[in-house]
Image 1 (cartoon, helix red, strand yellow):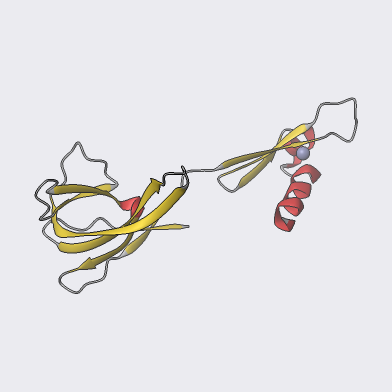
Image 2: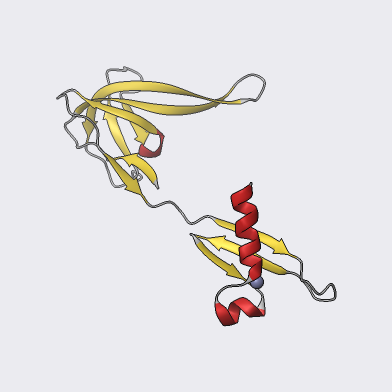
Length: 143
Ligand SMILES: [Zn+2]
C-alpha cells in the first residue's frame, strides 16, 4: 500500500521536502530532494486535487504548486508532524503467455489485475482456478 502525505491546510506555515526528477548531461535519470518554506494558500479549482499551493518569499516564483506524490516530508512551523495517509494505487495489470500442453492448441493468457488472477483457459472459466495460474504464481514467487 502506497503512503502519501495529507494535503496541508491553507494558512499553515510549513517546510516541504519533495523529490525532483532530472536528467544530467549524459541523459541519466537522477533524483534529488529539494525543500521550500512558506505559507500554504487556498487551492483554486484549476488545481490538481493531488497538489497544493505554497506562497514563498521567492520574488520571481512567489507561488509554487507542489505535487503530493513527490512529497517526502512536511514540517509544520507549529511543531506538528505531517500526517501520512494510504492511497489507492491504480490497478496494475500483468500478463503472461502460457503454452498449452497440446502443441496443436493455442496458448493461454494468465493475467494479474489489481490482485486478482485470471486465465483464458476453459478450466478457469469453469473452476475459477487452473494450473496455469498456479504455475505462474510459483514462477513469480521464485523470481
Ligand atoms: Zn488456465
